[in-house]
Image 1 (cartoon, one colour):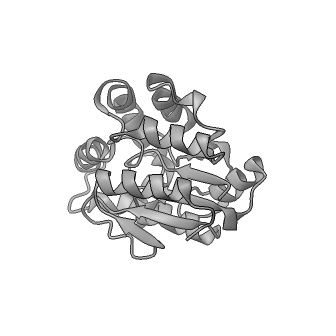
Image 2 (cartoon, helix red, strand yellow; image 1 turned 30 degrees about the vertical axis):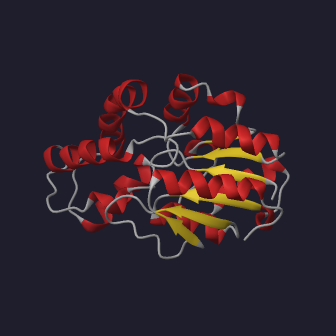
Length: 218
């Protein structure tokens, strides 16, 4: 195995619940749209969220306004509320000791990703950090962001494992040809197309340690 590639929201940090609360309020109060299952938006970036909503509802609010409303909450969520999953430091350190490279690939924009990287001093661990706005065109579930990451790492898909917690993320990773470990820990995301799934932080930690000590992709 050449690399472990982590999603950010819901995998490295517990931000999904906070974002779902924000999305529900913005969609109802600003867009005037009711009865939207916000779990369907997990794994999308803000621009693609808007496209998803506008395609299915009569939305008058401009995309830029929707994105800016989410931006207003990002600082508080990433700098004050979120925490990292348990034992992350041991997992990342163990990977480095085994000469496994580390990637962080998020559909979120660069500013949001850098808030997390800076707050938790993750820059010392990751060989590459890719955000949604680093790659032109649609982000997850399209595979472009993973294809870009593989190119930057100089790696091939069959030597890397992605860790994702959303259907959109799993789809992006598997379309790019990566083996995908699904972290199926929140409502509405069974991750049926992941190559394997775990459902708890402890199970995720244990499986990642196992993967780091393995000589091959499962």
